[in-house]
Image (cartoon, rainbow, N blue to C red; front, top):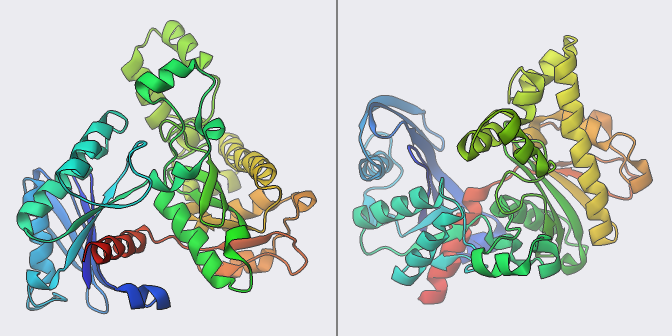
Length: 409
């Protein structure tokens, strides 16, 4: 089965075509046939990037005025006589869609029908920057590829296993009842992939009893306490703003700071929202960049603010590791993933330093030598294994699409 995986933003569509089925999933033998991205949709200078597996990459700048035209361009590229990987669109058998927010409606991926689409639209109030665009991508794709099954895979679904005492805030309960204010968590597809991957790598252990702390570290960052196939807690909350210091997001802070800033700076809700989401984090503290590589380079050159930003980033993560070890009553493994988690050997080293009291002992040589690759990087006497596992959210979306379609059939 060839599954087209789509991740639609306000002006972009990321895509992969994945060859998979239940048997290939069992053997972890799925194949990515092609992948790419179309950005700046809505302009006469949209950027198209396309990479067939084993073939030359293709780029072009062209006019793509809406998502319907973008999806049509993707299908044309996939079936192009020179650079395509399928003869025609009939060789696409299902479409999987990334959906950011499923609210309390969805604890698993779902075949999209009118009822599911209505619930996704309703959840748009909780993710106004994402859900409407994700849903628009589905609508355009269902028109371009009529008759195919379309499946929604939700970032929040994995964390729906949290208990009420974990996901509720210390607010009047009536506000939860009226407005569904609670911790939802995000990056669930990534946390699920890397935890499932580690359970497959360590088949000598009972998967349901495995205690894992997963660290998705990129421009957006989150952590999760995972036992078996269940998320017990996660650092992001009602929105992706809560938790760790991120590229441009503040992470945890005293909520009274918001009220104080509104008065002291004479700014409103829109300005505060922009401040906390776009101008804080590594960027705001360092004054250098939201890119950890540039922050580390500046720190190495003696930039004090870059050093403080780096230390803040790692210190927050260390605190959450301690908290999640308490949540899990110990940990069997810690998993680094995401752009920084997979490729930031300096960051991993700082996070794991002076953590031997909690059972973490990093092998510094392996940490550097295996940067960016799936690997066990702890020392043999570390009671908590430390892993790098590159994430693959698109494979999860493709797998869930197959499962949903197979159930229907």
